[in-house]
Image (cartoon, rainbow, N blue to C red; front, side, top):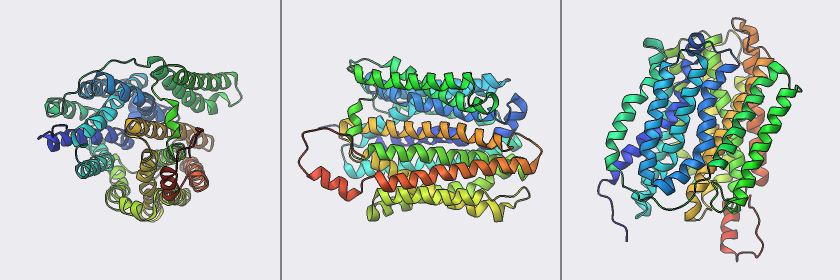
Amino acid sequence: MSTVNPRRWWALVVLAAAQFMVIMDTSIIGVALPEMQKDLGFSQSELQWIFNAYVIVFGGLLLLGGRLSDLVGARKIFVSGWAVMIAGSVVAAAAQTAWVEIVGRAVQGVGGALIAPSAMTLLMMLFMHDPKELGKAMALYGAAAPAGGTAGVFLGGVFTEWMSWQWVFIIYIPIGLATLAATKLLPNVESRRGSVDILGAVAVTAGLALAVFAVVRAPEVGWGSTGTILQLIGAAVLLGLFFVIQKSISEPLMPLSVWRVPRLGSANLAMTLLGAAWIPMWYFLNLYLQQVLGFGAFESGAALLPMTVLLMIFMTAITSRLMMKVGAKPLVAGGLLVLAAGLVWLAAVPPTGSFLVDVLPASLVAALGMSLAYIPAMIAAMSGAPQEQAGLASGIVNTTYNVGSALGLAALTAVAMSQGADQLGNLPKLTDGFSAAFIGAAVVAALGGVITLLVMKSDKAVAAEAAAPAPQGEKVSA
């Protein structure tokens, strides 16, 4: 019988703070983007790399982070992740050129990919002795994510308006150092023997980065150009190589057998399309507020607060109750369709729009859709996984969400630029470009809702399959 850690709740504070900071890292830069663009010389189309450099590396290395956590020890990887995060923050804050900023963001992504899976492993170790305590701990840990998103939007506005955009990165240095000092509260985990699939991690991360690069560059060099075609082929080859590696080695990052988990495939597809719709909406709404409506950084951050507060309230207090009543499938599908409706509403924003009339109600509808779909999709993906694959299933879902975010932002940036979003100062053309991106995101979200309705199994169907005798053949379940 495992010994109950008497300091487990204090340790949870450390882990929840880590989750808070990892999620905040994706939201705090939003309102700082226009100032960073001016100071570092990013073009309108290149600006997305400040976000995507983090997301691609974070998503591509999550599985490797989980594997290292298992082999080296979760506490050691957690500490290493924070050390890397601090280093990346120093580089990002000190950057004087665009490429140095992108490098700093990528290094931050490496740190996040080490922190997130090791934190989840430590949480499970601390609370797995009691299902009730585990449920309470998971709820508190989960609440740190929307709280981090909310704080990031607000603090990004405060720092950028009254200090400088560099402070959106500087803030990670003292917090990171304080977290490192508090890691003595965490349980020590012994390392174990095993191999690390470095080649697989490199293949999947390089493949994703090359795919995003090709999509970003395509509007400038042409979708049919030799460069774009070769880059997309190269990305496909690298991603195909990743799956070949996973099938051929004894200790892969992602054993392909995990895809037999009920609803893992359909939930991951839903999460991919959710990220591909939600993140571009958040990105272009930020630009609309500042570049079209003329909001300052603090005003823009404050304008996004109602949306993020609604997300936090629904995700922590309402969606879980709805899950118990109606199950995951209706919420995932319904949430994606509600998100699509909010995006269509946002697409109607005019060049002389009003925040209260044109932005606030539509953004709240979109946030409602996100809050309904996100947690149920996560639970749907993980609920059927055996204990030894639960962490892997969680890592895959987080990976696909981040992959969807990066590819969606790249594709919809291309759409926006083609419709005039690169014409700074021309408010009608800028608005046309942003509206096109909102419409594109709405199509993605609506597609996700329809696919979920068609292919995801209901809770009752999954329960019935679990109770039935196991079939002789093996197949991937939707």
